[in-house]
Image (tube, rainbow, N blue to C red; front, side, top):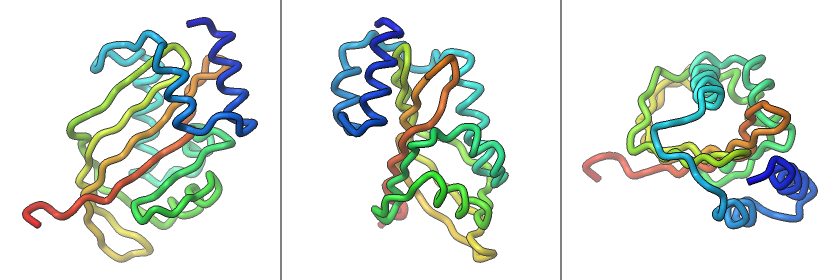
Length: 159
């Protein structure tokens, strides 16, 4: 797939011409990279993104999240980049492992996701949860940014 195509899809998304579904449908014909073989630059960015959430690093989140980033959180609420970054300052996560990983990559985008059991504190109050998530990444001018995250709260194990 040409870089020009990736540029055009990215530009159209930012202008609201395609939603996430449209981007995934348009990208479906792109050759994907096999799961478990992330490009080194994407693997580094994804690891830094996970670390930034564990550490609550505002600086890293500002660098890794695209200006048009949106989050659909576990309660179904849509949050902006600014809301997510602001809320991250009050949340501390314990290190976590992604289970049942999803890794679909094409030349200018990727969907990385899976399941996580997380624990930590939110405004000093302890919490635990089981979630499925998908992060949509866009590569623009050689830099990977997260543009969209969907999080689904899963029932507690044994429920």
